Image (tube, rainbow over all chains, first blue to last red; front, top):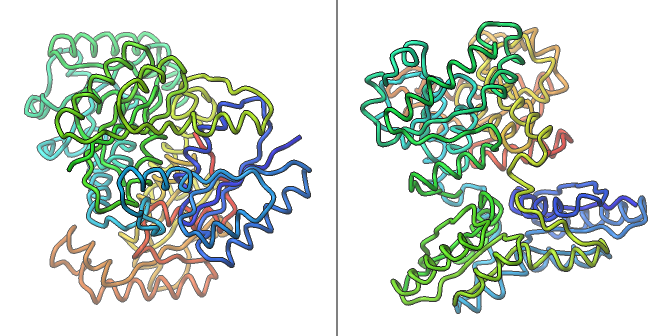
Length: 272
Length: 272
């Protein structure tokens, strides 16, 4: 029996999706179909969502599950009129939080993932642009404005980690790929010397690196296991010698790598 | 009185932060200090977190708030022993969901934002690489593999929106900046003709565009209000003439733009 899971939100659905998805991954044996309905911010749209939910019930005979973050009470009431298992992540916690803070919540729609905090949003866009302009050794003279600089061999995970940090936390994250020369001399280039306090090394299992590079340039010297072993071993020697903290990315997601580096560096995760 | 809000997670903290932040934005008048403690996955680390929470109470006299997503019962029990206002987002919903599904949850740590779904993760990395390699008109011959192609004038929001879609939903999102020639001819270049079904136009308020471009190249023809007005008006004419759906990005965040486009295109939001 297939279960339809609806994610309903008055704005983007990002919050409801994030927690909803986390919860569902704890039930791997259940057969789900997930549907996100964003922008349910009027009574009319709430009624339209109700129609979709009723159709799902008719189609697969199981009572749908609805995860929502609906701030407006009237909209929520319409949605809750349908026969479904309903979990509103806002309603569940807003009441208890109002008691804790001894004041009412604002009940305003769309406070996150929007432009409510315009200055914060501009900081974040600026971080994304900075990160793109300082990706892969580009503009390596401009590291004085970097919150951090990731270094490592080509394809060790620097670029996606930097983009994730910029996008999610507004961190200006540059990255520099260690060159053949850096690796043979075991010495940092001068532009990195100037930002030693913000350097973080990424390393990777040579076999995994070999697989990643093979996808990119099959049968090349660049992708060969021997070359991957040499580069990783030299990079790790350089990190040890220069006392640069180093993280192995082989079995970590970008969220995990970013979290570990930020936690260690003490940089604040700004949220948007 | 300052309130310390702790975000505790056995993995990255992304889920707890997302909902926690959404809830707190409903209480703008409260003075918060937010601290994320990730990787609380052992009893020892739980005790270390408890010490930090107790210190916060001692420092500012207010009972801290703890938002958490702790899957392990033993770890959770240690954290809950501290005197704080405790909201565990997992515990709150896992029990009711177990009843709905009539089965136990897996109680396994780190099912999201990690590598549990390795194939999904590779899809996502592939989407990020694709998006970077097809940013700003790069490799515009390769749009046959794009899930979507955003078009618009320079600085209308294409790049960050594409990166967000790739990073969050594993969408291969290319983008193409309309050239002077495209705008004066009011005609799509051949490489876009071939992927008409996946084209989405972005537009922007000329004044806002002017401000954004001024930050980048002050006092240039490129940034002048007249040039911005001309380009936006021509781009909108082109969208109308070619019947390409168009979204105004002036007052929308990248989450809102992405959500609106995905919702309209019917593309599925994959989650990781």
